[in-house]
Length: 352
Image (cartoon, rainbow, N blue to C red; front, side):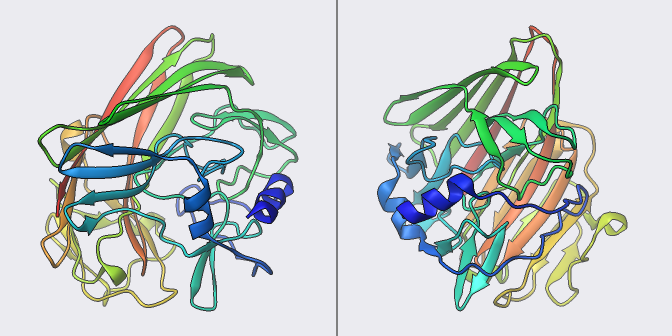
């Protein structure tokens, strides 16, 4: 594992990212890979329980943390959440390698790169102040990053973290709060994220507060990746919305195969289990401009499932899947003027 961390510290690679399709770049085949079990065993964790749910949360730690990438918010990574005997989250890859940009296959193993090797309902903010020239920019939940050249921004690329800000973690038996205070590259903010298991229920809430303490407006977006591990292969999973859904074919690099995805009124169904190395990624249309449309149900064939509600309007929805994980990725807009703050919440209800 120490060899992987040393390689990660100096590794920089990238390719152009299509912001509409978020197409996966061509993956180099890594020469050496490392088992994810090593990361789980060596990284710090916080265990939450409310008697119904039990969650394992990984705090941010640039030296020993489970996730040290620059793509996703490093706070509140959940590597396990159980309701009864049903496991909803957990690493969807068997191994890691610093050369991989997103994920690749080596033999029968799925190998994730440093910026995609993450688990749970993780979030990614669009960058602040990025320009395709050498300089600094910001990603909320990560820090001030260095752009070394004139290439476009690529969320699969690992950028140098110049300043991770000041971080604090506060825990109780049922909740954990992470804070990041940062000032750099023209932006200043206080970011707070709290994960709470509601007593006497099968509900988890993720609350956010972003306070703009600087003089530059913060205009960005954030999406929740929701790496759900409900059914191997995702066969017979049904995803439902409060509106009629359609694939956004105008912006789809790879439309969903008709033998895999069926659109049925207010939802979609996986008609079969996905094959090894099969990838699915496409956007949906049909949602409106109110928070009421941020109400998503994912149900498996055994009766286990999850409902996700947000309190902000959706601006984009992407569906991503491989045979090991299923993800519904809603995006919301973030606009915070200097001196103001924005709050948002995701509410999860789990059915074992």
